[in-house]
Amino acid sequence: MDAVRVALLREVLAGTEWPAAARRFAASLRSSVVPHRGGLLLVGTRAYEPWHLAAHLVDEAAWSGRPELAPLLVRHRVRPADPAHLAVGLGRLEGAGRGETLLLVAPERPDGGLLERVHDARRAGATVLSLGTGDPEVAGLAHDALTITPALREERGAAERCGEEADGAAAGEGDGAAASGVDLDMVQHLVSAAAGENSLPTTRGRLRFRDRLSRLADQLTSPPPGRW
Image 1: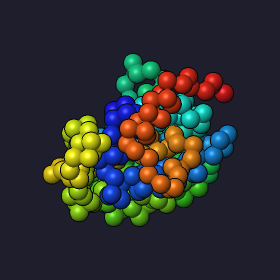
Image 2: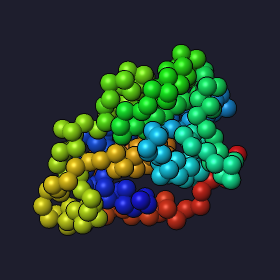
Image 3: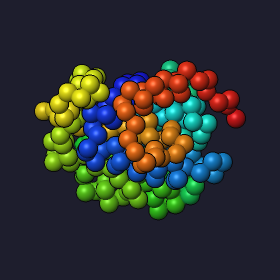
Image 4: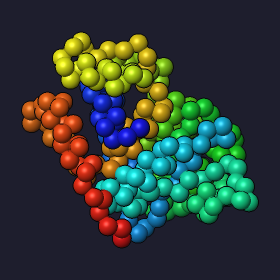
């Protein structure tokens, strides 16, 4: 999902708690990843690897000039032929400690081995964040968590057809409500986009949707900052 579609998704979700919740969690992520003092480790469950979140965070790190936001993807299964950046196994978590941040994406309860590693990383001083569906064990390990509960998935305004809904909102047609709910993939898009924001949006007045898209287009056509 590109930046324009993220903007459309935010427009569809206007009036729900999700844009603010994603920005709050992203702010927690930014503040926990301290430049030159550690790194961001990203891990999913055995059945779910957060590939897209990793890719989006890499892009946001480049565009925002904050290379520390580019995560190291920790994988459950590593093959000998995998390139170096995709060959980091769970053993990496055993060395996680103070100054590092561990982001766990868990659409279902992780196995005991992963939970034990995350627990050990927290005891060693790592900051643990989680995105998931509210498993009590995962939530108990996290310093901060963004949870997608069944009730929140019923939130009005979330839509798989976010482009169609946002077009209607921009034209003033309807209230943007939709039958489908917010899912983990949508929340990851919101969080990764918010992580790259250099400041929170102002609250003085409400810019028209087309004005916001125009400003976003200007940002997209600007070259990314140089790498450090």
